[in-house]
Image (cartoon, rainbow, N blue to C red):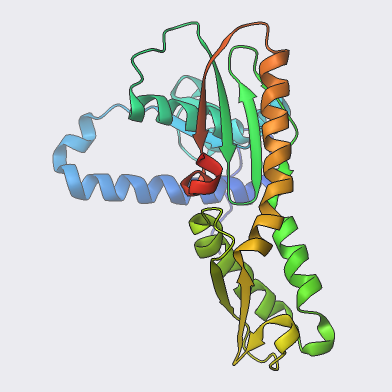
Length: 249
């Protein structure tokens, strides 16, 4: 039986899995790069950037940095841990190359992810509470397709996946639109728009889900702008939900 190597740093037992996972990721990345660049790989210099949720504490970031060091990412000088909204803002600014933005400007980032919306201004780095859109949609589905008609977790999960990947991104605000979700095993129910294993939701119902959440997003955005002591010159919309035309408008 081979001996388990000792850790050079005190790491909580729960972090062993994180370290091993990061080591596997690093090995995979290096393997892919070696196959693409060949011998030149040995002369590359790496700077590792790891993104974390905006709400992570300094303690959690320090723990992740320790795990990354243990996994072989290098010393502290080659490991940069930044928040996901910050990474999204950097990407958006580089991708759009806005000519009217300069160093020192205040930018409001609206990170509309698949399940949460984060708002942050980088000049003051003030994070506002998260809003949850997915929960609102899930509650609607649960209330509409009740357990007494054969609702189960698999049907709910399938319907929510369809909502996330299709309806939420494509909804334009047109209340005459309709979207269909597969709900296998659920009996036909005309009152609930269930027919032949499919559940239909109208654009009006999706609007009823979106509008209260979007109203809160707009309210928080205005509060963030008013709270900032600097003039907010631009607002950046990023994230999975950024593709939704209704939100962009």
